Amino acid sequence: MGKPTGFTEFAREPVPWREPLARLVDFDEVYTDPDADENLLRRQAARCMDCGVPFCQSPDLVTGRSGCPIHNLIPEWNDLVWKGYWQEALDRLHKTNNFPEFTGRVCPAPCEESCVLGISEPAVSIKNIELAIIERGFAEGWVQARSPQVRTGCKVTIIGSGPAGLAAAAQLNQAGHTVRIHEREDRVGGLLMYGIPNMKLDKRDVVDRRIALMREEGIEIITGSNVGNGLDGTVSIDRLLAESDALLLTTGATIPRDLPIPGRALEGVHFAMDFLTENTRRLLDPNYADDRFIDAEGRRVIVIGGGDTGADCIGTSLRHGCRSLVNFELFPVPPAARAQTNPWPTWAHVFRVDYAHQEAQAKFDRDPRVYSISTTEFVGNDEGVLTGVKTVDMALDNGRMQPVAGSERLWEADLVFLALGYLGPEHGVSEPLGLELDDQTNYRAIKGEYRTSVPKVFAAGDCRSGQSLVVRAINEGREAAREIDRFLSGTTQLP
Ligand SMILES: Cc1cc2nc3c(=O)[nH]c(=O)nc-3n(C[C@H](O)[C@H](O)[C@H](O)COP(=O)(O)OP(=O)(O)OC[C@H]3O[C@@H](n4cnc5c(N)ncnc54)[C@H](O)[C@@H]3O)c2cc1C
Ligand code: SF4
Image 1: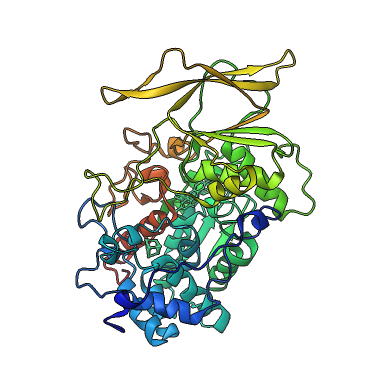
Image 2: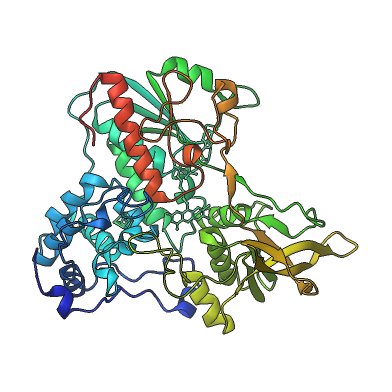
C-alpha cells in the first residue's frame, strides 16, 4: 500500500470532461486528456485503502453483479501508480483486461460502486486511473503487438467482432491457435464501432488502433462476411464449422424491442440503432451518400427509453441541432441515495446524470427526462408523417405501474427514437446449426463452460447472456477462450 493515509488526505477529484456546450459542436470524445495531470492521478491512486478484501476487483462475492467483472487487480495498480511505476501498472492491467482503453471509457464502473472507501466517502476514481494507465502505455510505446512463439495448428473461427469476439480472439491467438473472425459489417468492433457513439469511444484513434495491433499479432478478420445458411449471399456456417476445430459465436443481441402501438408505421418513428449506426457511418465515411441517415437538425425529438442507448440518442440529436428534446422513462425517478434494500457493495440504483443529460441541461436548461410515463399512440398527418405522441402518466399501484386516469397528454414530435432494449440474438446462424435456445431465445450455453448444444460450437457475450456491458462481453470472451483452449489442447494455461 503506497500511502496509508492517502484516503484521509485527498478528496475524490475526477478527470474533468470537456464543457457540455463546447462538446455539442463536434463528435469528438467528451473526455479531456486522461493522462494530463500525473499528480492528480497519483493522488487519486493514493486514496486506495488496500482494504484487505478488495470488493472492487471481486465480482460474485454478494450478488454476482458487483465489483469488476474481469477481476482487474485494482489495488495493485493503484499502488503502482501512486509509486510512479506506470509500466508495471500496465503489465498488471493487461493480465486481466485485453482492452482497458475501451472499459476505461465506457464501463459504468461497478468497481467504484463496491469500493470500500465508498461506504463512507466518494469512491476511488478507479476508471480514470485505468484509462490513464493504458493511454500512457500507448503514448510511451509500451503497448506492442505480441505474436505467439509457437502455433498449435488448431483453427478457431469466431463469428462477430464485438468485444466478446475480440477478447476471445486475443486470448486464443496468444495460446497459439490460428484465429479467423468473420464480421458482417464493413468495420470491426461490433457495438464498439456501430453502437456506442464516437463521443464516448473514438472509432479511428481508439477502436481501430487496437484492431490494427490484433491483426499484427496474426489474427485474421474478414469484414463484409455475413454468416448464415449459405444462401442469399451468406457464408455457410456448416462449411465454416467443417473447416474449424472449434467455432465461437459472439454475434451479439441485436433484435431491438419494438413498441407496437397505433401509428408505429408513421414516417419519423425509428429504432435507436438505425439512428446511431448511420450517424457513425456518415462520420467515418467521407463519401457517405446513404438515404438511411436520419437528420435531427431542427426537429422535435422524443426518445422513448433510457439506459445507454437512450442517452446516446439524446447526445446525438443534440449534436445534430434538434429543436427540442424529451426522454420518456416508464419507471419513477430513482432515489438520490441507495435504498435500504440496495446496500453497498451492490450496484446502486440511484439517479444518475450521464454525459448526454448534462448536455441537454446545458442546451435547454432542463433535464430531458420525464418519468412514470407510457406512450399510447403515435399521431401523424394525412401524408403518414409523425406529428406527435400520446402518453398517459403511470403510478405504482400494488407494486405494478398502472395508468393514471385523466392524465393523457399529446406531445408534438417530428422524430421518435425507440430505445427499449433488445430481445436477443438473431437466428441466421443458430437455425442452420440447430442450436438450442434458452427461455429468452439466447443461445443456450452455461456461463463458465460456453458449450452450446452442438459439438465444437461455443457461444459468449450478448448472444448468450442477453444485452449487457462491454466489460461483461470481454469477460465472457476471455472465459470462452479458456474453455476452447481446454477443448482443443486437453489443458489450458489461459486465465
Ligand atoms: C447504443 C448502445 C450503447 C451502449 N453503451 C454501452 C456503454 O456505454 N458501456 C457498456 O459497457 N456497454 C454499452 N452497451 C452494451 C455493449 O455495447 C454490448 O453489451 C457489447 O458490445 C456486447 O458485445 P458482444 O461482443 O457480445 O456483441 P456486439 O458488440 O453486439 O457484436 C456482435 C457482432 O457480431 C456481428 N454479427 C452478428 N451476426 C453476424 C453474422 N451472422 N455474421 C457475421 N457477423 C455477425 C455483428 O455485426 C456485431 O459486429 C451499449 C449498447 C448499445 C446498443
Ligand atoms: S473494467 Fe469497469 S469494473 Fe473493471 S476496473 Fe475498469 S471501470 Fe472498474
